[in-house]
Image 1 (cartoon, helix red, strand yellow):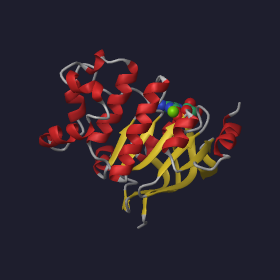
Image 2 (cartoon, helix red, strand yellow):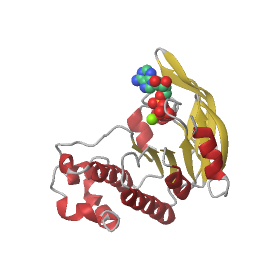
Image 3 (cartoon, rainbow, N blue to C red):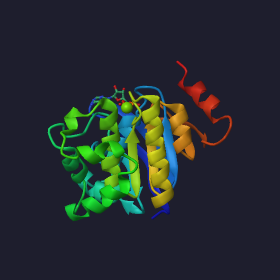
Length: 235
Ligand SMILES: Nc1ncnc2c1ncn2[C@@H]1O[C@H](COP(=O)(O)OP(=O)(O)O)[C@@H](O)[C@H]1O
Ligand SMILES: [Mg+2]
């Protein structure tokens, strides 16, 4: 048992041919937002896939709100209150915006109320609910991914490079949406980012992942945070 929303202890994971995470331990307190940064190929996506149960753990344990999810399959882990926005596009292009937003809901009767609640954050979807998701621009599809995650009222969100390829104005909107969600629902957030200013704006804490291990962490609101992160990300 632990009071943390997310707790990883000595997690080892990877792919058949290679171990990527090596005894990784980290925790995210309930209501806290942590940004995980690191160069390409350091294991960030592998970490989220491991938490969600898409990759088998070769060692260690993962607890979500005190529940041991180490051996649970992905749909059971999602049911523990985690919404996951993967790095690769995960929308159903041939389904309507409405159907994409409904997919994660255990009960579609809550759709109208949930959507009304989110609609001010995503005005672009209001008049277009019947349109196929595939007709949206890349930036709008990312917004839809965030909106779909929020529709489930998750207690925790895992976001994998959600700002990738977005225009600055859209990045701003996504940051606003996440900050609004955190204020209203105290949602716990673990976000993976390349965009340092966005990460520091949304997060309370940052951690640097290098070759499957956390090599540094600190307070996101610390004046020296950005400089210290750029130092780690420099090639
Ligand atoms: N499906 C896969 N099969 C084998 N190796 C993989 C697979 N996906 C990623 N990797 C390897 O795992 C390491 C970590 O990748 P990843 O977690 O995607 O890094 P990041 O998200 O930090 O860029 C890399 O060396 C990558 O080549
Ligand atoms: Mg990645």
